[in-house]
Length: 335
Image 1: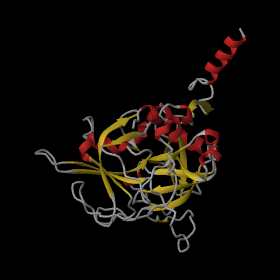
Image 2: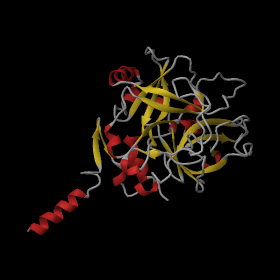
Image 3: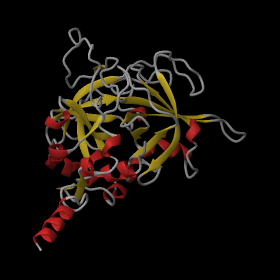
Image 4: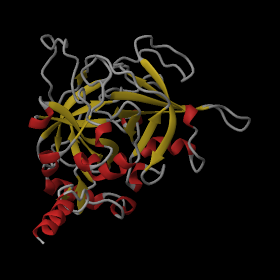
């Protein structure tokens, strides 16, 4: 009888989804990714780390004022270019977004980036990913190799958690599977996913780091975007401020989102939000004993700019909270 009880306890303790594998956060039960069978595919030894030879001595401290990012400073950040070729009925169409590398074959981004396809299925060969770059001085279509220092990849498939609908309709997240392994080096590496004690933190009122997709704080010139990748320190809104924003968001968003699935960030008044920033990462740098050193963990991806005036911020951006999609992400990736 004692042996049976011990056996039952072992079964209960190893239940991924019902016992230790989840933490109650907000209105959802958030999966601790370490308990998922695909955990070994993410948070590899180089996740969330920066190029070790970066020279910060001549670079201003990270503040709310955007500055140019250094090559290798945020090696998980990619530019996604979608190009639909011209037909007899319409000319070429382009759409640019940001993405975040999470494994050697997968990039996270916003599903709203793919509204260019309308109700048609996504054509993977029309989606190109550029990694390892901080400068885009020349605009090229996805069939032209204009940037010799970067890595170029095509999509094999695109999966949506919800659909490729406008960001204001919520659940704005997509997984891009790359057609071949991403080559990791000093300038290209995956970000880490949160786990363990980080899942107990919501960072309300705290500082985080935003990586902007060649667009924040830059005027549009000649129908193009600012050519440098930018970074800045931003403030995650407090719970009270999030309440204020949530109540003015579209009903289409509020019907599918809650405080466990999104958060908001305040931006300085002198910044300009461009569409190319959608899907861009917001990260926090934290030390978890099991991970050996302080690393960058992905907290959210940019969804859209809220139409609200909330002093002292010049604008408020709505982010998709990644931890609430852990089970979906991990279930939909492979080696």
